[in-house]
Image 1 (cartoon, rainbow, N blue to C red):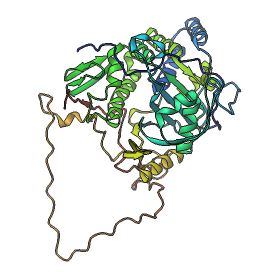
Image 2 (cartoon, rainbow, N blue to C red; image 1 turned 90 degrees about the vertical axis):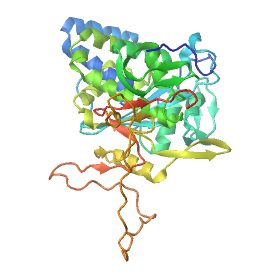
Image 3 (cartoon, rainbow, N blue to C red; image 1 turned 120 degrees about the vertical axis):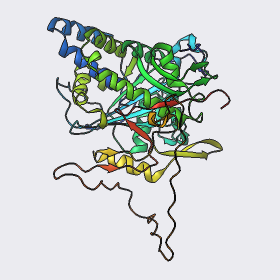
Image 4 (cartoon, rainbow, N blue to C red; image 1 turned 180 degrees about the horizontal axis):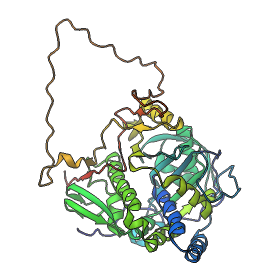
Length: 442
């Protein structure tokens, strides 16, 4: 595997510790890095002796830095044990570099990764929604870290919310877009991704065709790789080396990585290794900026208890449905309204989800590769001849409600599943995919 050089897009190095950021909270309701770290923290407590566990929790608590304030926070402590009800948690990946000069000068602090994790009320399912960084949204009024009040911004790109008011502003923006309440949030920087991938001992990924991303100087040959450190960061950041070079195909590549990370963290090699588990939890507390609602180790453990028994096939990663569009003279992506409404309605109704679309242009099903790992062109099915005089089926009524229809055929007493529209791309954590690499100039 070739190693990437430390070269990134520009940004200012004036990141300040967030203070008095505002948001909205209602009790109740990605899987992002923090969720898996939470599970690891719980495992440390469960598999260690009492004295080691006490020492671990003390050190983890001591490592937690100042939190981000969300409006309406509940300061009541959470007891050890699974958290009651559903959970909504927002994970934000910042491109700021955290002030590390190795990443170069940065023009702005952008939330280039924005992921919402929803744990169902019965703790049997988890859904992670990735929002494209160039998605046009309305950003509400936000107060910045220095107290500056920013007026609402209409049809702005979602990744500008972090620079307008920090983590709490991103929470407000996603709440306004989805109508969901998000009481928990965390922000991770480049160095945090490196520390997390190192702590887990590397994340296995499959690359179908080579990656050659000259923008960030990252190359990766076709084949199986275990990524950690800077290579893991570059794999997640790569845009021009994956799929068609768009942010939406990068999201599907990130979902491959996250699915593999979930499988790694649920494996016996990780769960039976208290040293590794403690390392993961330590990396999280030292590299994540948490909302005040996540500051308590008890709270993190209670969320972990809700996550630990969710089967891999019920951990669903999806991209917020969107397509190319323009606004205010800018190119970006716009929501596919009907599909987005169906996705959010299903999450709000706490229904099990079934994906009917593909995994996205950044990944390939390994079954579509020949014995040499080369993608095979799919066979084009024959189109049956139309029977003369046959009346075509009527098209759907555009005025019909967008609430998703549950799948048929569920057993008595079983929660009906919702078949998401095929414009909702994604994969489950038990689904193994390979990167569709794009060589330079491809």
